[in-house]
Length: 471
Image (tube, rainbow, N blue to C red; front, side):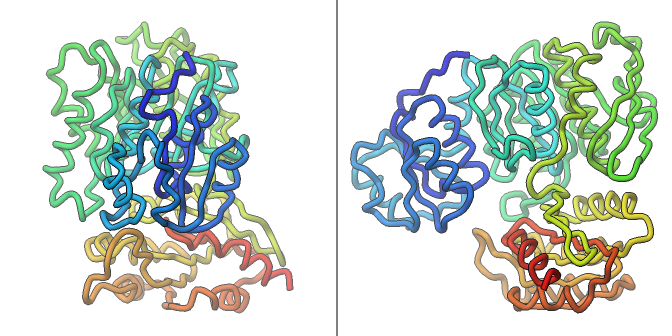
């Protein structure tokens, strides 16, 4: 793929350049030779990585940070209208581009794989990026988390394949035109933007409609994903491939065998789709625990095969995936206690990660530090979050991480604590994040697993907990 830079992206300025989605686009542009600049609220490993690629990164938001010769200002839906750099862009007449439009421009001329779904996007995108790299195909990719091996969330490759997450939260995935799309699952989430499942389905249908003529849709076994497949089944220029443990699936997951912190997965390809793979049966290892990760790997396998990559080559290459930042990421061990970080913030994700940890933990206790993410999500799903925490041996619940939202009267972490207690969980609230290392030190015993869980800054607690356990 040519290392071309869209004209509007020659000197882009990113507001919130350190964010998971924004930083990936900025990195790819910097690797292509663009003069990238931007600002973020705080220093981080991501801002340092961007500077290492030649980007100019300011800390804090101020009008003076925006250069007058910037060709575009790139924003996400989290940037508020009164941001001083956004206000300054209007004064200077600099075009403002949503990050999804910037990513769509980067995928022009490529063979894009877009990974969508309420859960599992980052993991599945990462699995594809790692496996394709392992095969020497040098794909480009933009992911919402840092890969365990390369330690980055984005790369400009010389190959033609571009793998990207397709975010439904603000309907930004409507901007992409993939050759292959994956929809892992469809659930009601992002309650500030979607009022009902009908709206969710309509949004995903719009995404599917953008798949290129003659393209492919890989559908997970989740009921919502299968309902979506039924809704778009009349499109004649689209190949729909189902993946799952039910025998009617085109790619049938015949068996998932947990093996500690890995799984062995056996798949069978439908004989009615003889062109789908050279080998009808395949068995390979998924190097991370949990049934949901096995499903992610098989979806990645199906997508890669639809781009012409032999299944017998791609399946073992998927074994090279060993994780991505914040997705059951081992942060370390101290005092005989392992600390693992989880990005799970929706009840389905929380349940899946806790079940995966339980399957690999044996008789060890699992302790959770959970930080709810968004007032709107907590208001709608607080009860289910509490019920998910009942899978842990004990939990500590922090205050809600607001992200882009303002507080909602009456919506607090107590909704989750009460629901967890009603489900029989050993749970307590702790509003003071600084107190958590000491709290965990008082709870944890050698052999325990501690899971920091949530999409906010709870991830910062891992090193602090480990430091306290070492003292």
